[in-house]
Image (cartoon, rainbow, N blue to C red):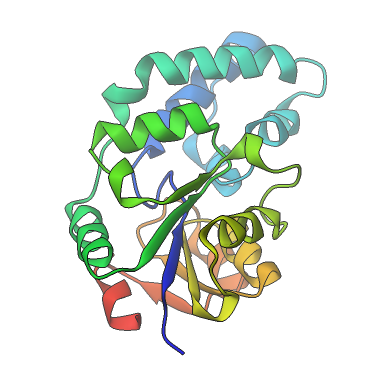
Length: 210
């Protein structure tokens, strides 16, 4: 049975928001906690919901920090967000060949759509399952299961593509095959420990897997 559905994480997979996320954390933590973090202080947590990451730094101020993070992130979103050209080419090919495409992200839907529209990518995706669409989040299987339900897709015909261990574990827990992208800023051994089914250096390699 062939692959008929491909689900993607958004940040770090479809669009490159690494600099945006790092700068947002740096600004927020310096403002509220008074010190400057290094990228490696936050990159292991890329892919998990923002409240959880901020609670790792402060149990007392994390709610205030959410507002600061989101304000900075939204204001600077378009400035720091980029895209890999192989992403655009791959999505276009799969869409034209009838592959059902979906986004499964821990990001708020409003900002997820903004990121896709920035590069005219929204048209390729039938569903976007974002933070507010499920009670549980990656690595729990609920976000992927929700996407499969909305797409009327079968687990055995689905791939999940992501740049964090949360994506890979979410796929495993949902019973779908997973692809880890090699261009992640997250320490790659964390993805390897999550045991993805495939590892790719270039988005176009998805077409070979399909």
